[in-house]
Length: 496
Image (cartoon, rainbow, N blue to C red):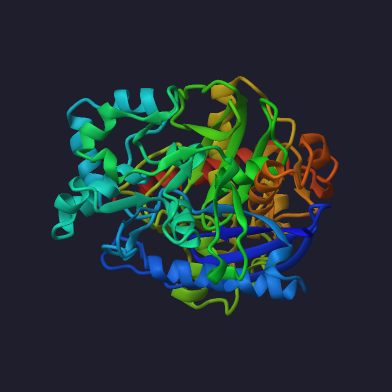
């Protein structure tokens, strides 16, 4: 066996990456898929298109690596989290489109649960805030709004899963209906203290337990692919939600270590060890991974729109033709010219948790240009990250020494330097920035002995570039003050 295949199923594209024994990338294949916006604040995907693009890029990556499927030792899966899929157990057909993590249609249902005084109980058991972001209310919406879905679910004819469970089901030909703790902990149905689905939470949302997948380890063989899909029976040996996979891939495996992933959204995780740490500052307590009998936990700050704001400049405003152009355009102006862009297109995440916030551009004058808007868009990613870090330091009592970064936007040097300037700490970019896929590969490889242990992996992590803070702290605080004014004006917009 020569390689590990990581399937990285993201919010806007499906990717497959082949890694060798040194943790180096051998081949990559990627394909974007359709984003569906049926109503304002609603976001959907076609589960069959997710599957078709993912299996296509898997075959393409294997071919580009110059190997055969039989040379793949194992598959690791990492995925967009919280996105909710329900399908028929007999036919494998989805009952409706997937409801994406960004979707806000159940904000009202969450408000109703809060009015019943249930938020504290939800947070106590799950480590989450009561928000439309998570899978539970999305699943309840499907049961209540798709004709016949609830009756079929109660009869045991339907299956629910986040994207990882959907992919394992399809890859195994319907033989395995499983998820892992990192994904289960994002459903608002899973008790992070008992490590199991919670009867009280299921009752609260009227979810039949028959719908749910079995919760397995993040690093263990859970199924095999059918030979007709990739032309070989390959063990599926690693599963982790994308942000937890990145934490593992960045080798942030000791309490206090932090990584930030710049993808469609922006997600900062701090490893907290083998016990969940409750947040006092509106962060999330989440399962990091479960290996063997050991469970590990993290604090998380979730920013809903990060790299997606660049995609909006390209597809929505049309001021750039490709995402790569934004750094060059933003660099044509010395600063943001007083312009702030709040990308709350699907509400505001940590630490605000306002589902009714909406996007806004503030501070425009006659002198404002497309370059100022581009710069403000990039800076918005860093401002949101800085807010999350402040909450994380307050929760943990730890002053960060450095922040490890990954994801597509982490390759943007202007953004990374501005991030270091705002935070006042070094921002460290590793040689391999595809750490989400790498983490999934590591989990799968450890499960089947492709790598012996964590010491093997620690030697593979290497720094590509470190960005040192250069900005005066007074200037940084002035910029953050402007951001705080801007986001306050964007909050509670849809409700009014």
